[in-house]
Length: 280
Image 1 (cartoon, rainbow, N blue to C red):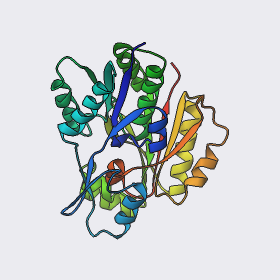
Image 2: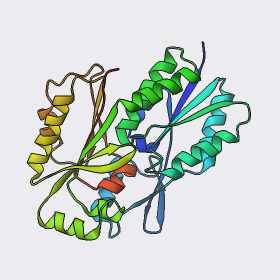
Image 3: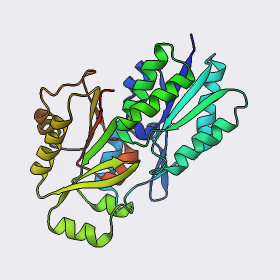
Protein backbone atom coordinates (compact mmCIF):
# COMPACT_ATOMS: atom_id res chain seq x y z
CA UNK A 1 0.00 0.00 0.00
CA UNK A 2 1.34 3.43 -0.97
CA UNK A 3 2.20 5.88 1.80
CA UNK A 4 1.44 9.44 0.71
CA UNK A 5 2.03 12.43 2.99
CA UNK A 6 -0.41 15.34 2.60
CA UNK A 7 1.11 18.80 3.03
CA UNK A 8 -0.60 22.19 2.88
CA UNK A 9 0.06 25.76 4.03
CA UNK A 10 -1.42 27.73 6.90
CA UNK A 11 -3.90 29.59 4.72
CA UNK A 12 -5.97 26.37 5.01
CA UNK A 13 -7.25 27.25 8.52
CA UNK A 14 -7.40 23.59 9.56
CA UNK A 15 -7.15 23.30 13.32
CA UNK A 16 -4.05 21.61 14.69
CA UNK A 17 -6.30 18.79 15.91
CA UNK A 18 -7.83 18.20 12.47
CA UNK A 19 -4.40 18.28 10.85
CA UNK A 20 -2.87 15.90 13.40
CA UNK A 21 -5.81 13.48 13.30
CA UNK A 22 -5.56 13.27 9.52
CA UNK A 23 -1.77 13.21 9.17
CA UNK A 24 -1.62 16.59 7.40
CA UNK A 25 1.52 18.72 7.76
CA UNK A 26 1.02 22.51 7.63
CA UNK A 27 3.74 24.87 6.40
CA UNK A 28 3.24 28.35 7.92
CA UNK A 29 3.15 31.71 6.19
CA UNK A 30 4.34 34.79 8.10
CA UNK A 31 2.42 37.82 9.33
CA UNK A 32 3.90 41.31 9.62
CA UNK A 33 2.69 44.04 11.95
CA UNK A 34 4.85 46.99 10.91
CA UNK A 35 8.45 45.88 11.31
CA UNK A 36 7.59 42.82 13.41
CA UNK A 37 7.35 39.53 11.52
CA UNK A 38 5.67 36.54 13.15
CA UNK A 39 5.42 32.96 11.93
CA UNK A 40 1.77 31.93 11.67
CA UNK A 41 0.72 29.34 14.27
CA UNK A 42 4.18 29.27 15.84
CA UNK A 43 4.50 32.87 17.04
CA UNK A 44 0.80 33.71 17.15
CA UNK A 45 -2.43 31.77 17.00
CA UNK A 46 -5.74 33.01 15.64
CA UNK A 47 -6.85 34.45 19.00
CA UNK A 48 -3.56 36.35 19.36
CA UNK A 49 -3.90 37.66 15.83
CA UNK A 50 -7.40 39.06 16.36
CA UNK A 51 -6.33 40.70 19.64
CA UNK A 52 -3.44 42.40 17.83
CA UNK A 53 -5.77 43.56 15.06
CA UNK A 54 -7.96 45.27 17.64
CA UNK A 55 -5.07 47.30 19.09
CA UNK A 56 -2.45 47.63 16.32
CA UNK A 57 -2.08 51.08 14.69
CA UNK A 58 -1.08 49.36 11.44
CA UNK A 59 -2.94 46.72 9.47
CA UNK A 60 -1.10 43.39 9.10
CA UNK A 61 0.46 41.98 5.95
CA UNK A 62 1.35 38.43 4.93
CA UNK A 63 4.43 36.88 3.36
CA UNK A 64 4.94 33.46 1.77
CA UNK A 65 7.02 30.68 3.33
CA UNK A 66 10.53 30.29 1.87
CA UNK A 67 11.13 27.19 -0.28
CA UNK A 68 13.24 25.76 2.54
CA UNK A 69 10.19 25.51 4.79
CA UNK A 70 8.49 23.19 2.30
CA UNK A 71 11.73 21.36 1.53
CA UNK A 72 12.28 20.37 5.16
CA UNK A 73 8.75 18.93 5.33
CA UNK A 74 9.19 17.00 2.09
CA UNK A 75 12.54 15.62 3.28
CA UNK A 76 11.02 14.57 6.59
CA UNK A 77 8.32 12.62 4.73
CA UNK A 78 10.97 10.91 2.60
CA UNK A 79 13.08 10.09 5.65
CA UNK A 80 10.01 8.70 7.43
CA UNK A 81 9.49 6.19 4.64
CA UNK A 82 6.70 7.85 2.69
CA UNK A 83 6.53 7.03 -1.03
CA UNK A 84 5.40 10.49 -2.08
CA UNK A 85 4.05 13.88 -1.01
CA UNK A 86 0.99 15.66 -2.36
CA UNK A 87 1.11 19.34 -1.41
CA UNK A 88 -2.15 21.27 -1.77
CA UNK A 89 -1.62 25.02 -1.70
CA UNK A 90 -3.57 28.23 -1.42
CA UNK A 91 -4.70 29.57 -4.79
CA UNK A 92 -1.66 30.79 -6.73
CA UNK A 93 -3.81 33.77 -7.74
CA UNK A 94 -3.95 34.80 -4.08
CA UNK A 95 -0.40 33.89 -3.05
CA UNK A 96 1.83 33.12 -6.01
CA UNK A 97 4.80 33.16 -3.63
CA UNK A 98 3.45 30.30 -1.52
CA UNK A 99 2.64 28.12 -4.52
CA UNK A 100 6.00 28.91 -6.13
CA UNK A 101 7.90 28.08 -2.93
CA UNK A 102 6.16 24.71 -2.76
CA UNK A 103 7.09 23.99 -6.38
CA UNK A 104 10.68 25.20 -6.04
CA UNK A 105 11.17 22.95 -3.00
CA UNK A 106 9.73 19.97 -4.89
CA UNK A 107 12.33 20.43 -7.64
CA UNK A 108 15.18 20.07 -5.14
CA UNK A 109 14.16 16.56 -4.04
CA UNK A 110 15.52 14.67 -7.05
CA UNK A 111 13.82 11.30 -7.46
CA UNK A 112 11.43 11.67 -4.52
CA UNK A 113 7.86 12.07 -5.80
CA UNK A 114 6.34 15.41 -4.80
CA UNK A 115 3.14 16.65 -6.47
CA UNK A 116 2.17 20.30 -5.88
CA UNK A 117 -1.49 21.03 -6.64
CA UNK A 118 -3.10 24.49 -6.65
CA UNK A 119 -6.46 24.18 -4.87
CA UNK A 120 -7.68 27.44 -6.46
CA UNK A 121 -9.11 28.07 -3.01
CA UNK A 122 -8.29 29.40 0.44
CA UNK A 123 -9.23 29.07 4.12
CA UNK A 124 -11.32 25.96 4.77
CA UNK A 125 -12.04 25.54 1.06
CA UNK A 126 -8.37 24.63 0.86
CA UNK A 127 -8.70 22.80 4.17
CA UNK A 128 -11.57 20.62 2.93
CA UNK A 129 -9.52 19.65 -0.12
CA UNK A 130 -6.65 18.67 2.17
CA UNK A 131 -9.00 16.55 4.31
CA UNK A 132 -10.33 14.73 1.25
CA UNK A 133 -6.75 14.12 0.09
CA UNK A 134 -5.78 12.76 3.52
CA UNK A 135 -8.80 10.46 3.55
CA UNK A 136 -7.79 9.04 0.15
CA UNK A 137 -4.16 8.65 1.23
CA UNK A 138 -5.22 6.81 4.39
CA UNK A 139 -7.24 4.42 2.23
CA UNK A 140 -4.11 3.54 0.24
CA UNK A 141 -4.40 5.77 -2.84
CA UNK A 142 -1.10 6.48 -4.57
CA UNK A 143 0.21 9.96 -5.38
CA UNK A 144 -1.35 10.06 -8.85
CA UNK A 145 -4.73 9.02 -7.49
CA UNK A 146 -4.57 11.56 -4.68
CA UNK A 147 -3.55 14.37 -7.05
CA UNK A 148 -6.45 13.53 -9.37
CA UNK A 149 -8.84 13.49 -6.43
CA UNK A 150 -7.55 16.89 -5.25
CA UNK A 151 -8.28 18.42 -8.67
CA UNK A 152 -11.76 16.90 -8.66
CA UNK A 153 -12.63 17.97 -5.10
CA UNK A 154 -11.23 21.47 -5.67
CA UNK A 155 -13.64 21.85 -8.58
CA UNK A 156 -16.57 21.01 -6.29
CA UNK A 157 -15.47 23.23 -3.39
CA UNK A 158 -16.83 26.73 -2.85
CA UNK A 159 -15.86 29.54 -0.47
CA UNK A 160 -18.08 32.45 0.59
CA UNK A 161 -17.55 35.14 3.18
CA UNK A 162 -19.63 37.75 5.00
CA UNK A 163 -17.40 40.81 5.46
CA UNK A 164 -18.01 43.31 8.26
CA UNK A 165 -15.41 45.98 7.43
CA UNK A 166 -14.02 47.10 4.08
CA UNK A 167 -10.73 48.49 5.48
CA UNK A 168 -8.71 45.31 5.06
CA UNK A 169 -10.02 44.59 1.57
CA UNK A 170 -9.07 48.11 0.53
CA UNK A 171 -5.61 47.91 2.12
CA UNK A 172 -4.96 44.60 0.41
CA UNK A 173 -5.86 46.04 -2.98
CA UNK A 174 -9.07 44.04 -3.36
CA UNK A 175 -11.17 47.19 -3.68
CA UNK A 176 -10.34 50.86 -4.24
CA UNK A 177 -10.22 53.50 -1.50
CA UNK A 178 -13.18 55.46 -2.89
CA UNK A 179 -15.30 52.35 -3.09
CA UNK A 180 -14.34 51.38 0.46
CA UNK A 181 -15.25 54.84 1.76
CA UNK A 182 -18.60 54.82 -0.04
CA UNK A 183 -19.34 51.31 1.21
CA UNK A 184 -18.59 52.30 4.79
CA UNK A 185 -20.78 55.42 4.54
CA UNK A 186 -23.68 53.35 3.24
CA UNK A 187 -23.06 50.55 5.79
CA UNK A 188 -22.72 48.06 2.95
CA UNK A 189 -21.84 44.53 4.01
CA UNK A 190 -20.47 42.63 1.03
CA UNK A 191 -20.63 38.90 0.48
CA UNK A 192 -17.51 37.67 -1.27
CA UNK A 193 -16.71 34.38 -2.95
CA UNK A 194 -13.69 32.69 -4.45
CA UNK A 195 -14.12 32.00 -8.14
CA UNK A 196 -11.38 30.66 -10.40
CA UNK A 197 -8.96 31.12 -7.52
CA UNK A 198 -9.69 34.84 -7.11
CA UNK A 199 -11.71 36.71 -4.45
CA UNK A 200 -14.67 38.50 -6.00
CA UNK A 201 -17.70 40.38 -4.71
CA UNK A 202 -20.78 38.15 -4.87
CA UNK A 203 -23.37 40.65 -3.63
CA UNK A 204 -23.92 43.72 -1.46
CA UNK A 205 -26.20 43.65 1.58
CA UNK A 206 -27.38 46.73 3.46
CA UNK A 207 -27.19 45.31 7.00
CA UNK A 208 -25.14 42.71 8.81
CA UNK A 209 -28.28 40.78 9.70
CA UNK A 210 -29.36 40.66 6.07
CA UNK A 211 -25.85 39.61 5.05
CA UNK A 212 -25.89 36.56 7.32
CA UNK A 213 -29.43 35.61 6.32
CA UNK A 214 -28.50 35.88 2.64
CA UNK A 215 -25.43 33.69 3.09
CA UNK A 216 -27.36 31.08 5.09
CA UNK A 217 -30.04 30.98 2.38
CA UNK A 218 -27.36 30.36 -0.26
CA UNK A 219 -26.01 27.45 1.74
CA UNK A 220 -29.43 25.91 2.24
CA UNK A 221 -30.10 26.18 -1.50
CA UNK A 222 -26.77 24.47 -2.31
CA UNK A 223 -27.12 21.60 0.21
CA UNK A 224 -26.67 18.67 0.68
CA UNK A 225 -22.91 18.79 1.12
CA UNK A 226 -20.08 16.32 1.29
CA UNK A 227 -18.28 18.63 3.73
CA UNK A 228 -19.19 22.00 5.26
CA UNK A 229 -17.06 24.34 7.37
CA UNK A 230 -17.74 27.69 9.00
CA UNK A 231 -14.81 30.00 9.77
CA UNK A 232 -15.00 32.52 12.63
CA UNK A 233 -13.04 35.74 12.15
CA UNK A 234 -13.69 37.20 15.62
CA UNK A 235 -17.37 37.51 14.75
CA UNK A 236 -19.63 38.32 17.73
CA UNK A 237 -22.67 36.96 15.88
CA UNK A 238 -21.22 33.56 14.93
CA UNK A 239 -23.74 31.67 17.07
CA UNK A 240 -26.60 33.41 15.29
CA UNK A 241 -25.22 32.36 11.93
CA UNK A 242 -24.74 28.78 13.08
CA UNK A 243 -28.37 28.80 14.24
CA UNK A 244 -29.43 29.76 10.71
CA UNK A 245 -27.69 26.61 9.45
CA UNK A 246 -29.34 24.25 11.91
CA UNK A 247 -30.41 20.99 10.29
CA UNK A 248 -28.44 21.54 7.07
CA UNK A 249 -27.39 18.23 5.51
CA UNK A 250 -23.66 17.46 5.27
CA UNK A 251 -22.22 13.94 5.15
CA UNK A 252 -19.14 14.60 7.28
CA UNK A 253 -20.80 16.95 9.78
CA UNK A 254 -20.34 20.68 10.24
CA UNK A 255 -16.80 21.83 11.09
CA UNK A 256 -16.22 25.16 12.83
CA UNK A 257 -12.76 26.73 12.92
CA UNK A 258 -11.14 30.06 13.66
CA UNK A 259 -10.36 32.15 10.60
CA UNK A 260 -6.60 32.41 10.82
CA UNK A 261 -4.15 35.24 10.36
CA UNK A 262 -3.43 34.66 6.66
CA UNK A 263 -7.00 35.16 5.46
CA UNK A 264 -7.97 37.41 8.36
CA UNK A 265 -5.28 39.89 7.30
CA UNK A 266 -7.21 40.51 4.08
CA UNK A 267 -10.81 40.28 5.33
CA UNK A 268 -10.66 41.86 8.78
CA UNK A 269 -12.53 41.20 12.03
CA UNK A 270 -16.15 40.16 11.96
CA UNK A 271 -15.69 37.92 8.92
CA UNK A 272 -17.68 34.70 8.75
CA UNK A 273 -16.59 32.24 6.10
CA UNK A 274 -18.64 29.37 4.72
CA UNK A 275 -16.80 26.67 2.77
CA UNK A 276 -18.40 23.58 1.29
CA UNK A 277 -17.71 20.59 -0.92
CA UNK A 278 -20.55 19.44 -3.15
CA UNK A 279 -21.05 15.70 -3.67
CA UNK A 280 -19.44 14.12 -6.73
